[in-house]
Length: 299
Image (cartoon, rainbow, N blue to C red; front, side, top):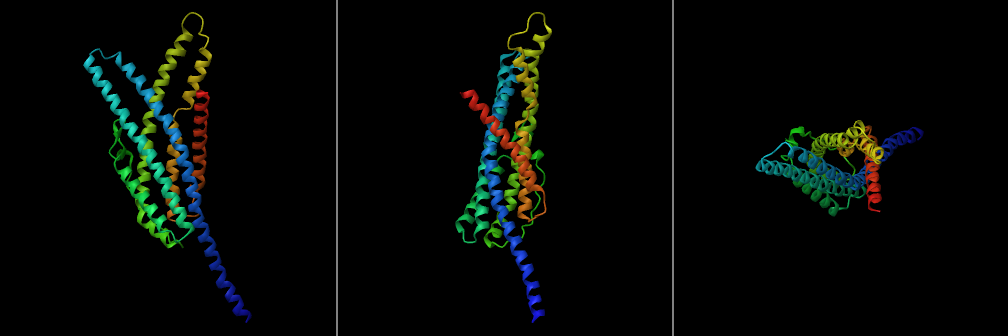
């Protein structure tokens, strides 16, 4: 009898451990959905500022180029080229925002499926979000930003091995959608990568030229400094130090893809989730700083 009891306990223990591990794995989908919602809230604020920055830098570069072009027709052609570039970037920003909202919807549906196996509506919501996300993403893979297309920085698609989950509908949805969603996140990252690189370089040039005109030359010339010289110098140096709003978004998006793959493949020992949380916190802090600055300027 005693041997039978010990054997029974030994048999039950692994099952209890397995059930506990399964619950922990499913709980991660809720955590990931919450992270996705935070990303969805923070990113648009950063995108708005980045778009404003790229228009300002583009206009500064255009104004500088005007002095070198004497022919009115050539000026018109140059202006049109600059306008078309801004329109392409505007399309990229709108696509990123649409992708972000759809990713939030998809992750939320996955969290619902992880909590219950009775949600046909949730399965459809996840599938619809994945399909819409793929449709939005596929349209911009050939989009050129700064002379190079998004697909130039887009690597090959890497297949994901969907793990076995206790929730049958969750597993089924993941098998049907994880590949396309992962590829859409790749395109999302590639868009941010191209925009981040181009905008950073343009902002750096525009700020350097502005500082040269408004600060450096006024300092070395004869005569008194303007009353606002110190504050203007401090403002421009701070802007130079804070260059690259999109770089924080890019880092968070890259970690989002890694964490999504680890979640789908059930790599519970991976450090991708803590790394995502770290970069997401930086993005949230940036978004809060942007919002605070906007409120101060509007007061």
